Amino acid sequence: MRPIPSVPMLALVVSAASGLTVAPALTAQLPKPAPNTAAMLTALDAASGRYASIARQIWEFAEVGYLEEKSSALLQQELAAAGFTITRGIAGEPTAFVAEFGRGKPVIAILGEFDALPGLSQDAVPERKPLRAGGPGHGCGHHLFGTASAASAIALKQWMQANKVQGTLRMIGTPAEEGGSGKVYMVRDGVFNDVDAVIAWHPGDEHAATGERTMANITGKFRFHGISAHAAGSPERGRSALDGVEVMNVMTNYLREHVPDGTRIHYVVTNGGKAPNVVPDEAEVYYYVRHVDMTVVKHVWSRVIDAAKGAALGTGTTYDLQLIGSVYSLLPNETLLKIEQRALERVGGYTYTAEERAFAEALQKSEAFVPVTLDAIRKVRPLVVGQPGAGSTDVGDVSWTVPTVQLSAATWVPGTAAHSWQAVAAGGMSIGAKGMMVAAKTMALTAADLFMSPATLAEAKKELDARRGPHFTYETVLGNQKPQLDYRKGTTN
Image 1 (cartoon, rainbow, N blue to C red):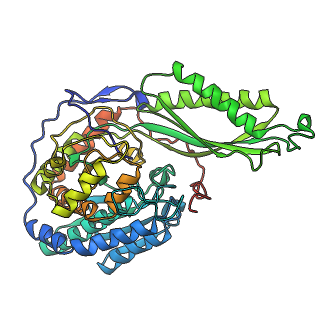
Image 2 (cartoon, rainbow, N blue to C red):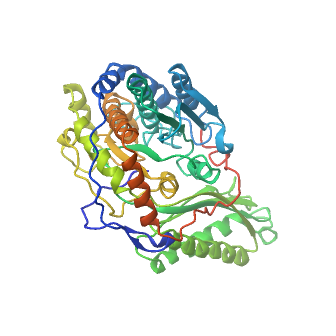
Image 3 (cartoon, one colour):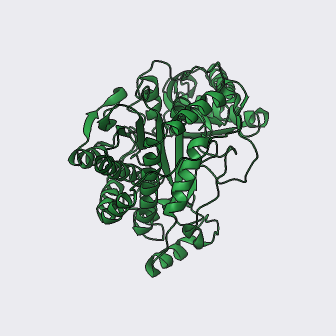
């Protein structure tokens, strides 16, 4: 997931997903920064080489959702060695974990992701060069995400011990963000029930506290079932499952004209048969529907299902649906965002070496690149709250149940698109590592401030209650189903 930067607005309006609500004006003053944090930042600087090495290892593992065994184990190993207690396999997800230090209130959680994307294998060079044709790659930078979160948690633990700070610190390792909705099952199963605030980040091409909304979504695989036959000798005896998929796709493409603005519908045919001279008896198409408002998503999804029904009826086939994922939009929390913005401005950006600048300039000449000044890496964007963004994340579900704050750090060359080989390339070299440490420091400072300010945590909870409305009850489209641990099966090459 990666929200698109957008222009400022005057007020934050919450989606109709749980009733329209306009948040009241925030009156709380920023608390004083936590004391004695300079040593924490110094410790992170001193360990930056080690964390760059860990991130690079996970970049090389490039494991997709729910299959991140080596990536998860490496982060757990690092946290255990630092004195955290590790609980593995939470919420029915083998690669999920909770690393915990301390006791009592407040409870502050830092999220970490580590899943890669199918088909984005790429070397850390500024031209297209897959390391393994068709293999996965970290096109969303989650190797940096999980590593920075672990680094931040370790530095915070040391600060808490040195300053005798009370409370519970958790680093929660969350698999399968890319379409697998890993955090949704965690929210549903109560992993965040006693948490007072959640801190997360995401790789990007700028340094910014993430105040934009993201898009809610529902995703699933439609599998059509027909009758195989010789495509030339006896086609009348066959019923093509691929026909079902193609007719469904035609119908949903016509649907695009008649959905609310801001709706996104994507699909990819994941099984179209095996040979042209055999009428396919099995075919599959994988769909996403997105909109910032979950109510709209549910309505459009029901119409996509109707298209599948009509396609099956018209082609003499049947179909079944595997619901893969569903997430809420990200609900910003201005109380926490102001704390995070202050921390990010203290950390600031970074500069390129001559080698890094040459890499960045070469990358900006590649296809589909949006020209942006390279000086963006040296600056922190002013805080923007409430504008609609793009992309989806299962952090959204967390944000509707616990006060949550997220930032972006420039781990990519300015102008890079997420889910691209260019993102993989920059994320595998020192540019990615530098942005990662901006995130680690900012999260550590933000968490330290929250540990020292119960009043801020209370204000953040009050704001969450106001924004989501008095009648909100969390529920997920996924219901009681188990995590779809096989949703990336066959994509690892």
